Length: 333
Image (tube, rainbow, N blue to C red; front, side, top):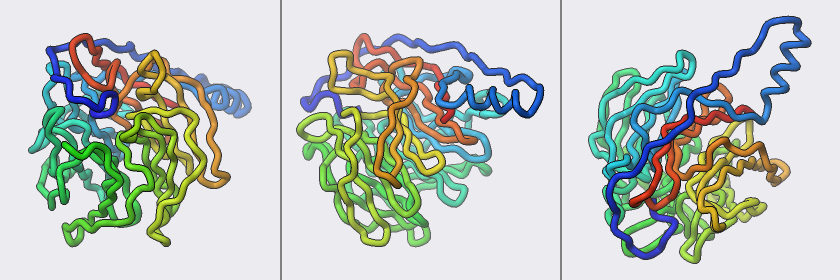
């Protein structure tokens, strides 16, 4: 990922693979009151799923029908990984799907109309991509769509019937504030109102008729910038700053709140296991129970009311000594 260092450093050789073993939670039977007590005890907690077979960082993810599709990413050979890895959250098993036509990392993805769209990303540390490709989970097939207007690794969110590529990082231009909207019906891109702060690798999500773009890294370094885009006004407004300046967290929206966990901060430890949530109504942040494993660049998806943080690495700029994690960390609000 392109956020820890602003200068180019060559990627180095393979790294270690590590992870956490799954620890499924058993909910006992009993009276309605006892079941309610157990459910309350599970709130604001982390658990583990079955480790991902091929650890990656900077991968995208989307969920449909209780399955999470992990797309792209950089693996421990420091090469883009193209195989689609599929996690069944009910059966707790991994399978594979058709490979991405264009393997890349730092890629964004979003589900719209039963189709998963992958947007931009990086081929190498020094080369961004314009690729936009659509995956049909039910047909297990890929198709190419209209390319991004320029090579970029943006954050991606859905608002209504449109897909937004927000900010990002371009070769030679650093972090950018540009925002483009993709219409699947016309298969075309249109520029929209730019962010106030040029940045990349931030948490993003849609709450009602607004998109939230929180934290990330700007050209001046890590940022707590938090902006909301109004569909009605086609404008970004400054909201309450994120509690931590960090990049590439695990993120997702659950019941009207944006959750962010982990990522790379600007402290001495590099990655963090901190977790927080933001509610647009009230414009307020709340600190949550920390992750079990600090990481950066985990694939993020929400399934059945839980946030899944899959894989990731021990640092945002993978090189010799980087640990690639195979764990699946699950947050229950």
